[in-house]
Structures are given as C-alpha cells and as structure tokens.
Length: 83
Image 1 (cartoon, rainbow, N blue to C red):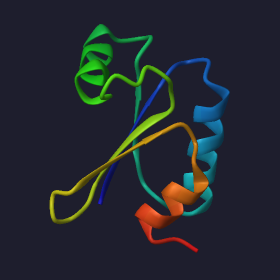
Image 2 (image 1 turned 30 degrees about the vertical axis):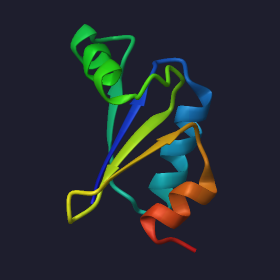
Image 3 (image 1 turned 180 degrees about the vertical axis):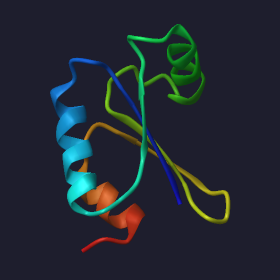
C-alpha cells in the first residue's frame, strides 16, 4: 500500500494526520504543496477539484486508488484496515 499526503507547511490538520499515522505505524510520503511548484502541479492533477488539505491518495497493492479529503479517521481506518 502506498500513502501520499498532500499538505501545506502550516496545515494543523495535516500535522494531526501524520501524527496519527505515525502512531499506527503507517508509512507515508508527505508532499508540501506551498513549497514546491512541481508538487502543487501534481496535487492539482490528482485532487479531483478538491483544494483543501490534507488530501491523501492511497494506492492499494492491486492498483486501486482511494482519495481522502481532510482527516476522516473512519475513512482512513476502513481503507487501511485498522480498528
């Protein structure tokens, strides 16, 4: 499973999400949109029109893609198979 989080340098909810994932021992890649124009362009290509962060793209082992806008613990638990 591959987890990519699009964030900004000042996003409190993004920080809370990464702390939560760290506590669950879930690895992820964090991309900061307001520090790198290339990352911002990538974010704009994958966000389906959602401009808020955190915006997370989870790709499962079979190539399926789940996108989660914000820090929705229920959606993360379901997608990542956590209790």
